Length: 182
Ligand SMILES: Cc1cc2nc3c(=O)[nH]c(=O)nc-3n(C[C@H](O)[C@H](O)[C@H](O)COP(=O)(O)O)c2cc1C
Image 1 (tube, rainbow, N blue to C red):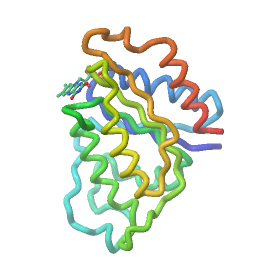
Image 2 (cartoon, rainbow, N blue to C red; image 1 turned 90 degrees about the horizontal axis):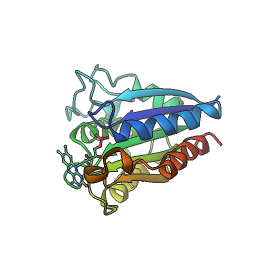
Image 3 (spheres, helix red, strand yellow; image 1 turned 135 degrees about the horizontal axis):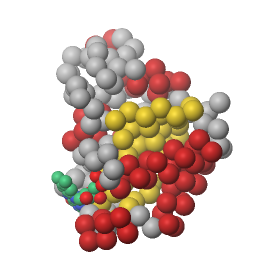
Image 4 (tube, helix red, strand yellow; image 1 turned 120 degrees about the vertical axis):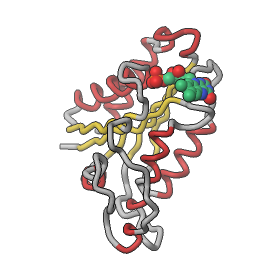
């Protein structure tokens, strides 16, 4: 059975990013995947402490909510990444998570857990598609040996609200989640 680990990057439990995650997860499950979801806004999530433990050991010295994610990532076939756009970037919660991914590369900067497919989901207030973040995220993941197979945006949420979540986008998100399992 294919395993997928999901990282939910919005603090809004019922926001647009959460809706996109729901669809992608439904798609992945419809194809038989086992899915585990991490809420990056969970209490007690710590940022990287810069201790460099992971430079000489596998794993992270910080024992918090995120600790099991390293084993989950190692065992997974694919990752669903998500973030709203906050000031032309990912959310603070997502940035903390990215820093905590230092252990997925070794001391020699070689990926420890390469070969993951990644579906990236974004939500933004502006109707204009801002691709800068997606490019940056793609580059960071490339350093982990992960490939972003698809990036999907829900754009224009400020004025359109939920209407920005069109049926077409929801269908494409479901299909992208399903495709991760193929
Ligand atoms: C602190 C903050 C900063 C934001 N900065 C931007 C931005 O730079 N560009 C943009 O298009 N939307 C921006 N937004 C709007 C969010 O991206 C938008 O509301 C998004 O749909 C929220 O997703 P969610 O419903 O999943 O939380 C910002 C929202 C907040 C709270």
